Length: 511
Image 1 (cartoon, rainbow, N blue to C red):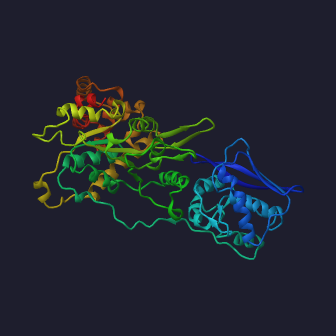
Image 2: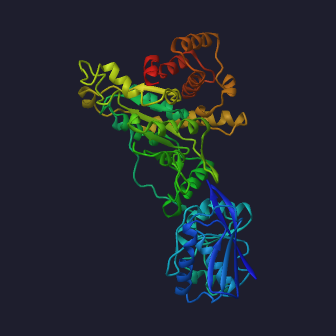
Image 3: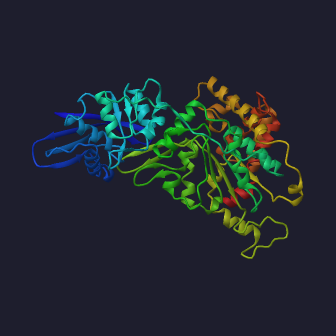
């Protein structure tokens, strides 16, 4: 008799159903696993053997074959340990044959029979809920699985013995409660920043509309300080966003204790990051920083120091909101609707814009052009706001702390985001921010009067705006109007939006 156990394999954040078929029959004593298993799955044989012995059981002296169907789907990860072990236990009568009916099973086994945490429990629980099934997972992942819904039966034992006793009726496992991560550390506040009023204004606009922001300025001018305080003015994740973000972090194995948080992600990878680290991929395909920053902020400090081909890999995710990882044997898509915030110095030493400074390498303009040429023109063109952050003077630092902090700025940002969400919901669009508005809708949501059309036409010719730049100016202007609570764009909104495109000479030097 073949014993069947349901589990999953992951493609991106999608949990594909896998049928674990365990067959014990007479013949040579051998333990085979088939169905395109990777090395971690093949090594499950030894973990299962030791875990069963530690639990008071022993593998039968027969031929054991485990098939992971469908056989043409690659199987990766250690979460196949528990379904294989439970299939064997049911096959030898250690638990009832029908005990596993109606459950999706995943978990890794320690050699002493304990269940250790695995990645991807939340997507697996969501897939189980969609099929009307329950889920069996390690105790440490129980709070994560419980988020799939009250209707999902969740069994989260510490070890194999507890689970066997539950099925025999001698012990009852209680349903775990959804985990919420305790956030004790307060976020850095904008009240800490003295001066830089124009830069703070740009950060507020970027946060309100989800726009990409590039800050250029000398070392110590406060670029990183501004970016690190952006999470303090962003509203908490909406329920649908929370689920999407948590599923990505679950697959990546970054949910601490299975607990979720409503704080938006803020990722700041080092400039030595590789393409798989930033975009996603690797030998075992995992989400990259662009996906881990989904519905949050991806901050790239020292932008020109990143490898050029890695930076150009951002272009497609910025436009589509997805990171598509293509391999010879599979194609995986991760959500990547992130807000890009970047900072850079004007040149390698960072002092080219200082009055009276003369660069020893070359003329200041030449030194700046060489350094900025590491960033491609198409990537710069995808930046909605490009601003200069000047050095802070001692006179600014002596001044008392500003009266307006993150609470006041965050209230305006939340109000503008609410207006945008309601607007696009009324239009039947599955977007919430102006930065994601498709060009076909801009004529309706960002309509200009005759004076505004004349201004934009003249500015587009003078600044040599591309079609992408033209649309991004309109999106920023729409955000400015939302911050002011205006239903229609005014000339003042359009004029301010144009100032954030950067000067044409700098864009040409970067290209």
